[in-house]
Amino acid sequence: MSKIALFPGSFDPFTLGHYAIVEQGLKVFDKIIIGIGANSGKKGLLTTENKLKLIESIYPNQDNVVAVEYCGLTGDYCRENDVKFILRGMRNTVDYECERNMMLINQKLYPEITTVLLFTPPEYVSVSSSIIRELLHFGKDPNELLPSNVDIKKYL
Ligand code: ADP
Image 1 (cartoon, rainbow, N blue to C red):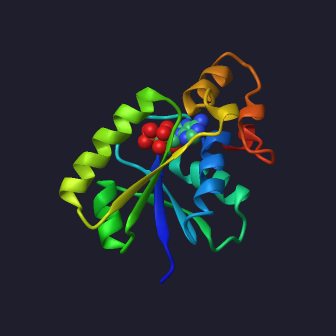
Image 2 (cartoon, helix red, strand yellow):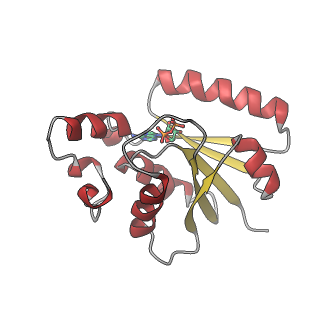
Image 3 (cartoon, protein in one colour):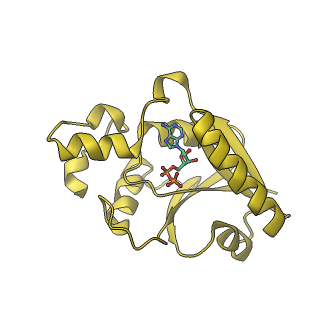
């Protein structure tokens, strides 16, 4: 049976750090579904449609990495789509605390789902979507924090 993981997040935008987690994740899983959570009413940098387009431009016509939008709880999406693994990345102890809490809640609510945490490669520990948004806000080019073929201006 093929192993499928959901990699959930806001991906506003998808960064080199996210890319590194997908690369490592593909060593463990046959397929990764990048799940763009569309829960919060917060207006972010990119529309969900553009987040999807950006990610699809990185993985064109690839069956083993796909992007989807979902509403509601991550565990419910997994249950409804028969996904048994949640993949998340961990940069530091702050991420660790959040991820552990989420894992514990999910374990209680969805015992059939296993959370897999992968460590961020050291060169990407300081990469975050919020830094990219901050750089753009102040008119700086954030492209070196994005996967190489991404031109963020196309998606703003
Ligand atoms: P969320 O709002 O759910 O934290 P993000 O889009 O910020 O969504 O992150 C999605 C996942 O990617 C989380 O597991 C987060 O820890 C991880 N992540 C974010 N930035 C990095 C990075 N630089 N390296 C590795 N993982 C990262």
